[in-house]
Image (cartoon, rainbow, N blue to C red; front, side, top):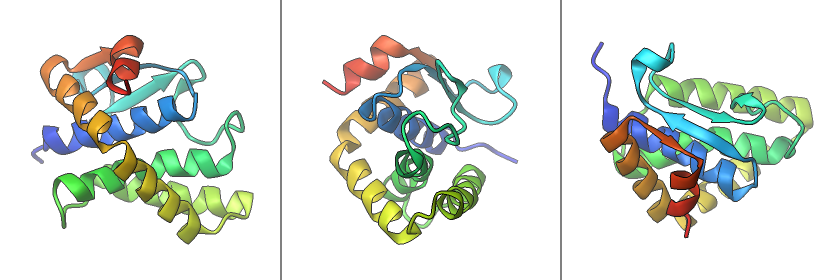
Length: 143
């Protein structure tokens, strides 16, 4: 299976951006497959972003999860990665657990991705150039 690095980069950039927007301090983001068992990953001080921790609340965690899929839809309409499918499934579970309306969570996530899409694109470009980026580069893209 061929990995679309551009799609992986925009997906992980969206996760990293929303983590930063919500104050979930991000250590690094990577799309280097030799460093992760999947195509990409975002790390925070709580460990790999799992979006299930209560530290920032269920709705924000769910929005972080959906951000990758929404950013992919903007970058390459009609394309859905395996990562996006998995994130949507995790979001459904998370929404059920916290009693959240998935339509509201999705609407809010889409709005945030639209609002911060310039930063998402900057982070994606850095990921494509470097493979792994650190905290300063993630937060620098938000300025």
